[in-house]
Length: 420
Image (cartoon, rainbow, N blue to C red; front, side, top):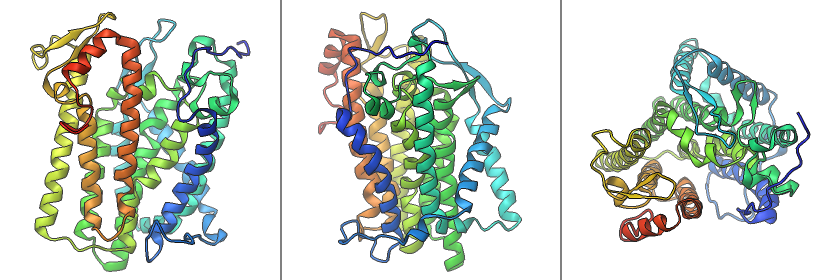
């Protein structure tokens, strides 16, 4: 295969361009480590100055790389097992379709069986609390190494296999965004694997470790910890049960696989999304039955909106003539596709984001109101979804033209009805 240095001349730079691509790989890993340090401190104050800094000895444990690499190997093994069906992705530039194993939920179930067996045999899963910092350091290291490997290998990929947004010719920016769209080792799709497997299932395992640590310290798990674990397990299980839907997302279809996605999948998700559970280990919260019921209802409402809107969108994409979507109002586009302007997608342009944010709030509320740290996820996720919505708007306007303008007039609110 030829060495490919050809670049996309019209690629628009995002995330602050070269400056953002230089700063983000420095500051985001430091943010992960800082949040974990704050979470373990007595004050748990994100605004404390000078900031809480651990001794360097706490950043390393020889067990950490063994666990990280072993975990990646285990999930890779599950990925390759002939479980579940095989689906085709979207049509690529060369007219081909890649095949993907839809067995993420199977991997979650097998992982749960192995964890249950390990706990029955006496494995000290609560020790993950002591290992959080070393594990995060190793996950960050793996993210940099994998991103470097992907960047170097992309120069041997054919031009049609490159992602336009990460193929600008600027090394720092392309390393960050990812040059190749679907890097594979044989049939093993690296981006698809990392998107939902090691980080997402790892998040659930870390949460369970925090629950077991609380049991060690206080002889039982608190209601707050049980709610956080249950809500987030539902979210992960839902994502893996509906794994096929990820094949039509921007991450898979549009974005290259570079540091942005690698770090997000392998380090950011498991170690920042589990902050609420880690916080509750050091800062236990009492929760009334009324309060728990209200939080449960909020999470249920968010999940209902999230799942129903996503299911409606996915059904419409698969079969617009299906009885559940056949009577919905649509707008024709020049591409031949139609845009939904009724049902959930007539309420706001991104009802799934609205459901996501309601669930995010419900995950933080069990941690009380005395600290800002547990609400980091809500703040971050709001910023992320607003930014993602803006990216969606640009891509859809470029793709659908006047039809998108007509859709925006019909559905003026982006995420929050009557607000935004």
